[in-house]
Image (cartoon, rainbow, N blue to C red):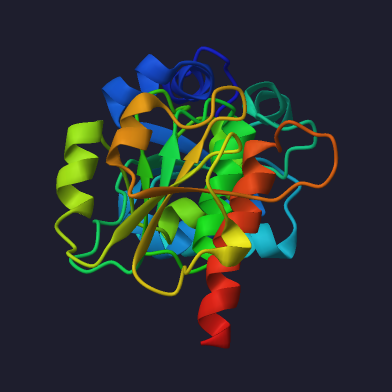
Length: 260
């Protein structure tokens, strides 16, 4: 059992939880809690190590056994140490340190979500979860987005990092990849103008650019897009939260295609 706060793994987890540079340099991130560790279990080959503390629920115990059976280094730590390194107020006694190993982008794509400068980790995590729920083919992360491996993004994503292909790109790379699909229409969500999403045909191959709540789509996003769309808002509100706006637009795509 690990009992010292000076233990190398404990210190590493602290750094991974608080420093983006540490995550980028090491290629590691934290998946904390039963739900996220369950999602990580099929990817146990990408787990550097797993830490747990008593008491564990039967569900968490089965995860400890599962990772151990997969050959992962599994170590018990004290409850006090788990409380000190956990990123939640009520730790569930289990966390996995995972290697960054996103699913590769698909060779064919029919629906792509593009995150343009989404800086709020909660909104970015919500975008991961919403895109995965809509069965999007990929999520592209453009310059200015929050760190996709920050603990808050991972928690908000609820395990979709293991399910949804995603990649961080610059705008030139995004243009090259999206234009490799000849039928793909690129639409930028813009509350300042455009055609209503209810009146826009979203049944054909579509890339949907979601800008930040504060700034909307950037100049490069507008230059790349084929058209702009908006969400009609009869109330006297300038804009919606980026996560809410993304959910409305993404599931308008789902609605139209289900009707088709």
